[in-house]
Amino acid sequence: MSEISEMKIFQNRRVLLGISGGIAAYKIPNLVRLLRKADVNLEIILTRAAEKFVTPLALSTLSGKQVWRDDDFLADDSGFKIPHVNLSRDCEIIVIAPCSANTIAKIAHGYADDLLSAAVLAKNDNSHVMIFPAMNENMFENPATRENLRILSDRGFVIIDPEFGELACGVSGKGRMPEPGEIFHEICRLLNSDHNHKLLGKRVLVTAGATQEFLDPVRFISNPSSGKMGVAFGRAAWLMGADVKIILGAANHDLDLYGLKVQRVVSALDMLEAVTCELENYDYIVKAAAVGDYRAREISERKIKRQNREVMNLELIQNPDIAAEIGKRKRKNQILIGFAAETDDLRKNAREKLLRKNLDYILANDVSAKDSGFAVDTNTLRLIAKEPTTPERIFSGFKDEISLEIWDYLTEIAG
Image (cartoon, rainbow, N blue to C red; front, top):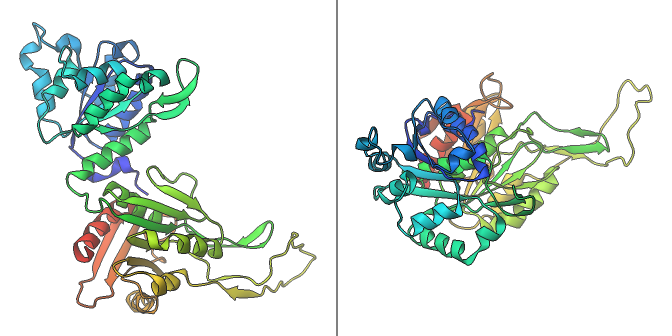
C-alpha cells in the first residue's frame, strides 16, 4: 500500500511550519521529512528559543529551503522581504509544532514581536492555523493557558491536544507532543478538508483483514488477506472528515491505523457479533474483510497430533454470511458496501452477490491478477450499484489513492 506521504493529492500544497521553543522540537526534522516526501510546498519559521533545540542547518538541509529565523524579521539585510506577510499570505495552513505556552499566549492576544507571531497575525482569511501544544502538565492545565487555548479555538484555530506520557521534566502527565507521523496525518486531514470533506459528520464502519477459524489451539483455517484495502478505505473516509471504526481481523502488523477506532476480532462469529452491536450507529457500512465461509464443527481443546495419518478428515460447517445478515437488518438510508474477490466471471458473480445480500454497492476485483487483490499495494476495483441506471466505474492504482476516488464518487451518487 502506498504510504500516505506518497499520495499525489498533497503535492505542492502550501504549508507554513512554525517551531517554537520546547524540547519536542528535536522531533520536527522527521516531520519535515514526511512533508517533503509528500511533495508539500513547505516553508519553516524557527523561533529564537527553538534554535536551542534544533538547528536551522538541519531543517534547511531536509526541506531544501531557507529556514526563516527571528534574525530575518525587520532585519537590515532581509527585512525588506517582509517575511511575516509573504509567508503567511501564500500558505494554506500554518502549523505550530511544538507550540509553547508563551507562543500560545502571544497569538491569543495579538502580539507580533517575533516572526512567528507576526506571521499568524498577518495570515489570510482562508488559511487555517493548527496548533500542537507541548509543555509541562501544570503549564498546560494552568487557567491562563486553558483560557488562551479557548480564545484560539473560538477563533477557528485547530487545537490538537497533547498526549499523556513521560515529559522532559521527568514526570508523566498530559503535555507530550504527538509523534511526527501523527502530526503529519492531522496536517493531511486538514489539507484535504478544503477540497474533499464530503464525509464530515458521517460515521463509517469498516470490516477488514482475514478471519481465523481455529481447529485446535495451534492451527486455524484462514486466507491471505492483509487488511490493506479495508484499512485504506477507512483511512480515506477519515481524511474526508468521517468518524471511522475498523473491525479488524488478522492483518499486517505495519498497517497505518492512526485516526481510526479499532476493534480486533478473530473468527467470523466474532466479527458478526461486533458488526451487529454497531449496526445502528453508522451511516456507511463497508464489508471489506475476507471472512471464512466455513469453520470446524468441533474445535479440539488439545493439539491434534499427526499420528502418522496419510489423510485427515475435517468436518466443516458454514459460517454466517455477515454481509447478508447486515443486508436484512440495515435501516433506511444506511448504505451497505461490499467487496467481491473473484477469479472468474467478475461482473456476473459480483452482481449476483450484490442482489443476494441486499448491498447498495459492490466493489469487485480479480484476485488472480498479480497487481490486484490480496497482500499487494495496488488494486483494480469495479464499482457496481444496485440501481441499474448508475454507471459502473473502474478504479485502478494504489489502494490509498483509489479509496479516496471511490469515496468521492460514492458521495456524489449516494449522497
